[in-house]
Picture 1 (cartoon, helix red, strand yellow):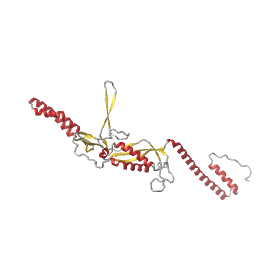
Picture 2 (picture 1 turned 90 degrees about the horizontal axis):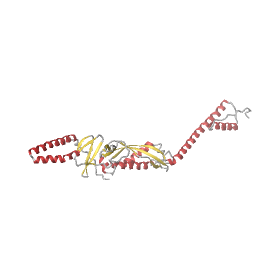
Picture 3 (picture 1 turned 90 degrees about the vertical axis):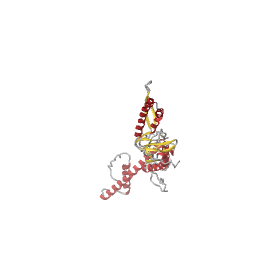
Picture 4 (picture 1 turned 60 degrees about the horizontal axis):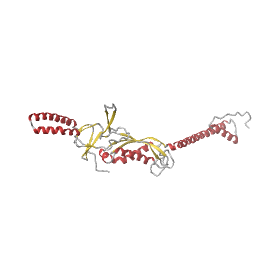
Length: 338
């Protein structure tokens, strides 16, 4: 990349209104001069007025109008001369041309003002066609780039689908225009690359013996549980790549995260099995506590004295009742205890 290109903001060019008035006034005076020169037969006056009438319109090409948060990069015969910034009515060298290689690139992002539309109606057919005129203006607003979902393997090799939304803006118009071929496509490519580089470091869910920070120690980082941390690393990764293109990454957010369809069903079954095991563990812990409490209360109040065999039978019956999936069917013992 060419590191010598530095943005130069053009100052003192907000004279578009005065120049427009002056050009129109000179045209008016040239008309009077033509009539005067023809009546008084002054050849020099006629020549000057005709020359102005033929070529004076060129000055109209130097009139530029910018809205807030817009910029215009100007070149003169291929050489960068400066950037117009700020809202207003400007006048520049009429031979200067605006340059923006990304003017016609549309990435489905918000705030993109690069395309203006005009409707042209053909009277013969009665149909309406739309003509798109590509403006060379560069938006300085904060824009949102939402790339499509992409499939990436996490640190365990499981395919996951990830989509990110990146908020960005142009900081240096000269670098954005001249350092890269198309700064919008360049940003989109760097977003895809950064997502792949960061996602492959993390597991989808918390997994033992996985180091996501690079310190050599296992941690509990994951794509699902550390969304803010992952998004921050993606932002830093993108910023490091697009700094030379004059772009600033304001923020990055994960907008979609899921297992790939080919393993989604298997992972759902795994999660369901883990949930069932955790629930059963909780039920068993509670049932054991209830059995211990029941035995202690019976022993304290001496309601009934049970030998070890009867205690074991009672514990077994209580655990079956408390841990079973179905309601227990009571059996009334009408005989003696023994």
